[in-house]
Length: 253
Image 1 (cartoon, rainbow, N blue to C red):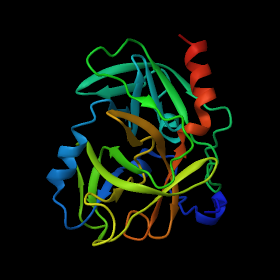
Image 2: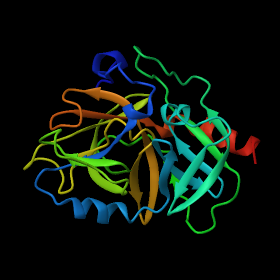
Image 3: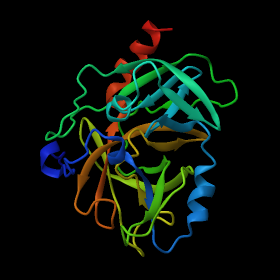
Image 4: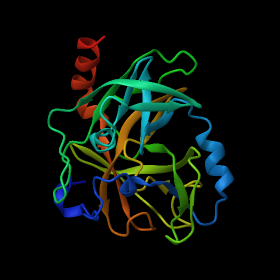
């Protein structure tokens, strides 16, 4: 399938783009699936935590977290916190990908950041990142926090900061992004869903044998109805940036 130009499918409300309020939503699932099932699935991924004040990140090494530049931009200087399994870890330093863009009117071609924590996380096993280039057609599990809801209505939303997860399929890729379509039942997966605006950094995870790997991080790329059936959800493609991730971690041990 031909990759899409970022501008052709990017739809994002400019108002509040860089405010915490613009990042208040989390995963959205099917209207015919109970919220308890999404919370139950989310509980299986303790390595996914909150990048405060309003983002998501995944522990990929004892002191390292992967997220997006949009989520990292909201971190108060010198006061960053990564909340994981009820414990808060100070963010020692933020590493933005040098070509990440934070703009009011341009799609972020690259949207990625790494956080190094002030101490090691010893109680949670980190997840590795996906390095292959075969994401298209693969099943993914998307994990996030904040307001849950369903794909039928924007009015039925819940804001309780519980970790939830949904599933989807990578329907399209280009060099920078992975795209997942939110299919309406009976199409789609049993726990079909997408990340929403505000889940900046929420991982799209693929399972290889028994290991869960980070294949994408949720970034504000949208096509069609946002957070509703028929819409397309975008993720920064981790496999493209493996050299930068590995070098940044190696150079800042």
